[in-house]
Image 1 (tube, rainbow, N blue to C red):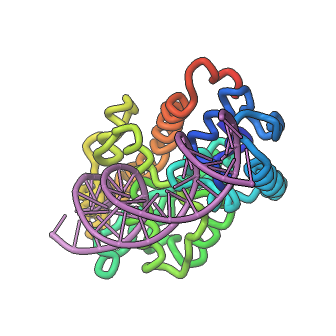
Image 2 (image 1 turned 120 degrees about the vertical axis):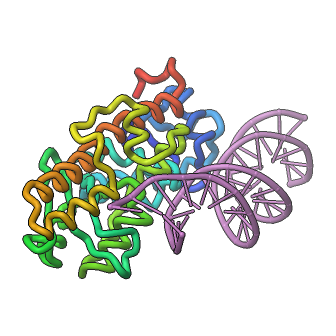
Length: 253
DNA sequence: CTTAACGTTTGGTCCGTAAC
DNA sequence: GTTACGGACCAAACGTTAAG
């Protein structure tokens, strides 16, 4: 589903009205006609105004417009349209407290490329800012409460792009637990099933003591977490689409 | 353990549509 | 024109919950 299939961005249109439009076969902006069931002059004007703005935003590749217009629960709909400027990222730290603890590694995955910045090596204000420069949409797991504030306290960066947090998104489908638990639920494979966040803290300390291979293992874990979010997100989106869109209409999208 | 961002719930209001 | 109804939206309070 792309943003051109969505009408919930128009003022006064929620999921109920949107579904009514879809059921009438109006499944794309260009199929919209003011003369349809449940839509009078006022709504027609608002929908047309949303479509106009949306078209402009698409021309300029602006995710922000849709992030503003869509209700919070529909943010997952941004992904397919803005896939190539979506940045999945995950951080490892020495603990949960962003006042006391420090960031050890940051992995970013965008448009098929994965890169990891490491404390004491190439993790700096500048490299971090540069790494996020092309990101129009951020995807994390619980990053709204953890990764973003942690990075913003620790570095001179502000991550104010639209942000899709997988945790509440998964919850819409009744998927709860951490990323690992949800992966198991969805059948996503892991190379390092025995590493978790606490182990990542230990691995960093081992690395500081000079233990061979500890950093490599930490990085591998961080990258796996990050890259696996792609699969999880795509699986979840497929489910959510099937849910908001009745089976018999799906081919019309 | 400690947060704080979400969703949900509740209750109420406002507004647009369509039927009369 | 008038009115009834459904749906959108708002605000506040509340509960849930996973990050290393």
